[in-house]
Image (cartoon, rainbow, N blue to C red):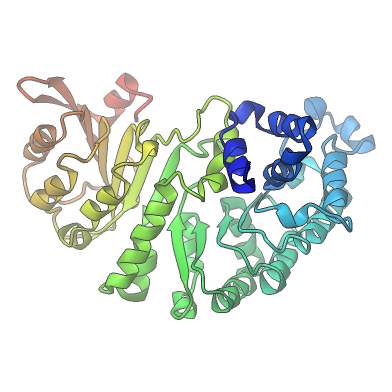
Length: 415
């Protein structure tokens, strides 16, 4: 059987039995060994995100964290002469350094640095750590400057960039990302959380094949919420069709179960109660002008066939303040079939406080809700800032107006 076909077979193994099944196939017949090793080491997770047993201070004072030895053993394996490190395509670094003593954390970072220098074929790097001392950033910057020739995706989670902003070390990291973009012909996808965009000087990336995608990834709702924002592209030139195409390409990549599906495979393993790709809420930062230009419709057309929409419950449109009235006709055209609209639509300002003023409309709110109900057969709830409309009768398209506090009591899952 061809090597590429063996990899495809191994890729279809059930998630829960993936590692053990691949190992068994490697032992069962020598012809499968190389493919099994390729699959086993393709995605490596360095994870120290559980506390000491019972979180006992006296235990922590005399014992190392029980996972530290595993991290160090894996790092040692990756650093050997016949290392499997060149097989690694995806690396996930998940440390909560509050669960480790200072010396343990520094040792773990040193081990990771050694690993990174051997992973010359790494394509996707996800960094999620509460590195309060900023130790990891120096190593990450060095890797981007010297070893990341194959890197295609870099995801910096909220705790990482929080520390970087506080320590003033975000600029060297982005300088390294910019230099990397100049050395490669492939587009590098940078995934960050919304607030970090204000810290990025996009003029540095004007000549760099870099795409920025927003993704809010709090610890508790990881992989249930996705944030998409065109402002990163509009910050460069809001009228450039090429930038809009780059945005749509990134949206398509995020929603496609293709080659990059492996980058997102571990997302479903973060929360045991979630099945793979159970995206529950999609947030889209957009302006009324972009709706008029058809950006919303083109976004939906791009993701219309994605299976990730199967479990979507809420779609949230977020508008900046001081916007023109929402163009109802353009909005309805964007949401018209065959677009699959979830059961809940929210239309709010970017600063989504309970007492935030509503988004200005060009029609009466009830008229907008009724029109949405006619256009979107699956729609059951419409939230307009502090007011919630619920469908009472499907045949007559009759809606009832509720205060937000009352609606939260009736529909806590959605709101």
